[in-house]
Image 1 (spheres, one colour):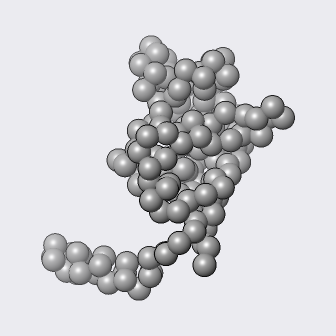
Image 2 (image 1 turned 180 degrees about the horizontal axis):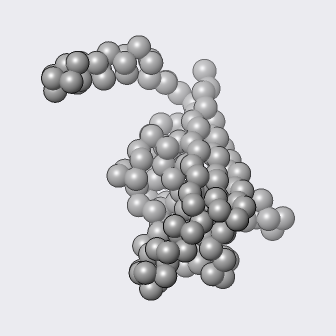
Length: 146
């Protein structure tokens, strides 16, 4: 039975502006594909929205920032302006492994914040939430936190 993979993220636009100014292009090369940088043409709100989208995709993939590289997730518009997500490398492999299909993204920004929401259709077996809880409780006990 299909399920959904969901991710959402929000970031302060001035924070992205500050990182771009401090790291003189290094941040742009590390986080964005050349096509994303060309499309955004230095518009920080657009870059911030894409940063939020990449974080949201990582959440939908269940990896966080550790499992995939920033540039393995690309957000570019179709001919009508609708943002589309493209996955490469480990991000694409992870999506295939968990049966994630039909990934959609919505972007928005205003003066201070950019936000992105991602929803994907997931086919195949889904982890039992009770099993996940039991594994977590066991780890917490092993570490003396519970």
